[in-house]
Image (cartoon, rainbow, N blue to C red):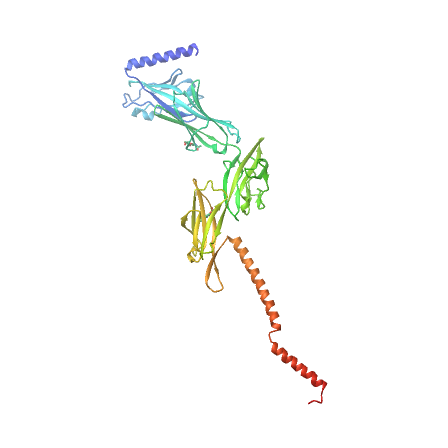
Length: 487
Ligand SMILES: *[C@@H]1O[C@H](CO)[C@@H](O)[C@H](O)[C@H]1NC(C)=O
Ligand SMILES: *[C@@H]1O[C@H](CO)[C@@H](O)[C@H](O)[C@H]1NC(C)=O
């Protein structure tokens, strides 16, 4: 502190003291928070008006006059509040008759923080306001995923022991490393984290002090893989279906050397890549943006389950995301004893996230609109396959804490037997149905051929008597030709 500011502080204390002594009442300091860059309103309200146009004085402690109005209506601005004819402070005249002499400050800055006082001619107490500026800043402004980022909330001047709460996208955020410190006049709350896509969004710092609350926000965006947002994201797919393994970089960020790998199970000592599935197709579609490196598995097989890794280099930093593919199947078992009864079991290659299974019967009305009827909860469904109402499409829906994870459908099909009696069987989705029909057709053709061959062979010996007759006749003729006398 230099001498000048000591004197100023002293002056201020004397000023406060005299005010206190003169009015005989302790003037409360009203706390006002304002976000940097916004408009602050410093209240100065009295219940009655004494004059139509009183003299008004707004001063800032240690800084002198902010704004002043004489009885005559003449206005004056402090030098730092009026630059190039543009005034940052206003005291709206229209409110005076209601006893409201509040001061508006536009585009507040940290330097604006401090104590202000409002004195109105003919009114008793002066009005004291403490303006505190809150600002949230992010460093570096757009971090690369995996690198350090700090989000800082400054309050100037810093209050003694405020409460600070962080919000990320309107939900409370509990920082792993939070630092509270007083840096000169300023109070800081600093959150240090490793930048991940999870941290992107609107960061809000909520400061509470003496019953008043102030807040400020800043948007954080992280460069890197934005989808999936976290590692080991689980993707569910039914056997035979197509699935997209997402891997989307920040728009505009084109990764160098993008690679997709399938990882060996964790049990292996060295994490090595294994072969990608046959139906795996890395991003090559022209419709895909160059930062979208999502891959497609055209037809998921049971063996395709496991962990996949998508990676690419951005500004010298290798970014990678692991994705776990979980494959769903339906096991069908028909116990031999009970005719017509069967069970369907919903199987997932990893059930760690699944909290509930639900069996749904899907029916179609004539206009082909689907309707779902939830039949039961649980992994296994027992069905009477003979019962006509059980035919058709069944879906096993599985869900976790966050809601629906996926579903797998199964067709319980009617097959007509030779005897005309209806029986039913289970069959897998279309591919399996086509396969089965084809087999049946081949079998039928073979059978037909066998039958034909059998019939042909049988045809030769079908009329043994006739053959004998023919034979006899020809023998007789021969004999007659040999002995023409014998007649
Ligand atoms: C951020 O959140 C705050 C408080 O929830 C809100 O007032 C502000 O408008 C938000 N900003 C953006 C850019 O969404
Ligand atoms: C199964 O999932 C698909 C795709 O999300 C959805 O369109 C379908 O309605 C779901 N089926 C059931 C029975 O929930």
